[in-house]
Each structure stands twice: as C-alpha cells, then as structure tokens.
Amino acid sequence: MSRSLTRWLATGLVLGLAAFTAAPASAQSTLDAVKKRGKLLCGVSPSSAGFAFADDKGVRRGFDVDICRAVSAAVFGDPGKVDFIPLNTNVRFQALQSGEVDILSRQTTVTFTRDTTLGLDFGPTVVYDGQGLMVHKKLGVTSAAELKGAAICLLPGTTTLQNLADYFRPKNIQYEAVVFESTDEWRNAFFSGRCDVITSDRSDVASVRAVANNPNDFVILPETISKEPLAPVVRQGDANWRDIVSWTVNALIAAEEKGINSDNVEQQTKSQDPEVQRMLGVTGDFGKALGLDNKWALNAIKGVGNYAEMWERNLGEKTALGMTRGPNKLWTEGGLLYTPPFR
Image (cartoon, rainbow, N blue to C red):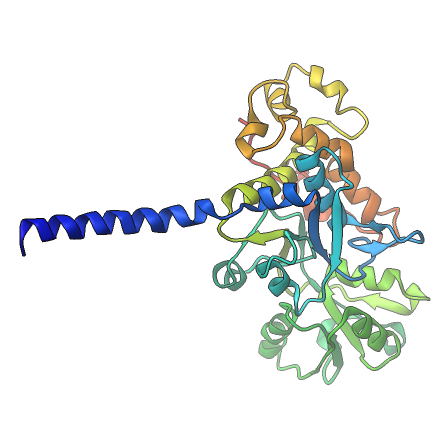
C-alpha cells in the first residue's frame, strides 16, 4: 500500500470517528428540549392513591408526582411547570423511549434486564419495596402458603408474574394468573371477586386497599415475595439529564438528613455547614455543573419539601395508605436511604 493511500485512509478514519462521536453532542439535549418547551413531561400512573392521582379539583397529587415537581423546580425554579401523562404499565417504557415523556416516575422497579436492554437509565431508588399479596378477608386466608388454586389479578409489563413463578414453583403451589390491561380493570376485577388475590408492590397493594369502599374487607398477607427498588427512569444517552434527575432526588434525601425542609430552607442558606452551603448554592457552582441555576436544590426542596415531608404527606401513617417508613428511613436511623456527598 502506498504512503499516500495510507495517509488518506488514516485521515478518513479520523474524520469518520470525529463525525461519529460528535453526532450525539449535536442532538438536542433533554434539558434544552424541556427549557424550550417551557415545561416538563412526566409519565405517571393513571390512578394510584398516594403515588399519582387527581384530587377533587383535578390536580395531580402523590409521591411520584412530587418527584417530577421537584425536577421542575430544579430546572425552572417553579414546581408547577410540568404536565403529567397517565401511562399504563404495558406502554410506559415505550412512551419514554419515544420521547412522549421526559421522565417516568411511576412505581417502576429497577431490574437487570430493564437497565441493560431497554435503552433506559434509572435514577436513585426512591422507595425500597417488595411484592405483596392481598386477599378478600372472607376467604379466611392468612398466608401465601394457603393460595393453592387461587386466581391472582396481575398487570402486564411488570415484574409480578415472574416473581410469582419464582416464589410459588419451589413450594409446588399452583395458581391461575389473570392479566388485565389497565389498572382500573385490574382493581375492579379484584373488588368484584373475579380474582381471589391481587398482587403488586406492597405500596401499590396498600394503594388499592385505600380506595376500596370497605378497606377492612381486604387483608394484605404478611409475606414479601421479592425485592422491588422503585426509581424514576430517563432515556439512556443523556448523562446530564440523568444527573439532574438523580441529584434532585439526592437533594431531597440529603435535606432530611441535614434537617432542611420546605419551611426553613431559605434560613438554612445561613448554615455554616459547608455541604449545606454547596447544596443550596451559597458557595460553589453545583448548579452550573448541571446547566441549572445554583439554587436548583433549594428550589426543589422549597417546592415539594424533603423526603420525609413527601413520604408523610402521600404515604405515611396518617394517610389512607398508612405506611411506615421501614427500610425507607435514613441510613442514620437504620434504613437504606443514603445519598452521595455534595462535594
């Protein structure tokens, strides 16, 4: 091969690689698209008490809703610049992949296959959960071991079917899986007696029980048959947007740890704690590193409160769901909530 031909091939290879690596950078980032649109598009459950539901004025409320409001506050300084897109379980990932939504905040479990094969990235775990089962009280069932031959209501596109098989097969317990396309059909089928059992994450089962006409007619069985770490989801390939979502969640958790809440966050800018100063934008340029205002975390906390405020408002013991924190306590209190340092 001649020296000139070698030089020509090498030059072409370099230019080709440059074009390949530059292509993603030339595409509009999610942050740019969100800012240009003037609002965030958030995929949520059509109706899930405590997580995403419309109140009597049609305003969306819930824990998953608050995650998106926090991101809106971090980006715009306003938690209200967000549209909520109701998504059933079987279309939620496609909606995110296609760009119909910017973030999926919908009681979604992190799994190996979802993380590695769908072109998606997960943010930090916001609820440490596990699959539970609820039965009609009149059946007299007190344990999952008594569910031989039971009809179990399921939703498609979830981890529940595989979890049931993994749990019951070694115990040689046969059951009938009854799959419904929408959450309304799923709940109503259970309430009407078409199924003996309804199963989902324990938080979701508690949500179903909370909207029943007579919650005391139903019993959540004691077994937790899987691990279900729930997290917000974004499209893969936009590291900056993933960082914005992840560090907004981290800020809500860190705020609880530091004693910062929606009422005192402005006052906390006077704190002498260096980490608090960095997080709230008093020192450093953490916001600029994300493409946001340096008060991004302050705005998120002011907009929705810290993690504890979100929990108690939407899921806590004084709500219809009546959930205790359990593993969702801070690591300093024996729980699993732990955020990387702001430094």
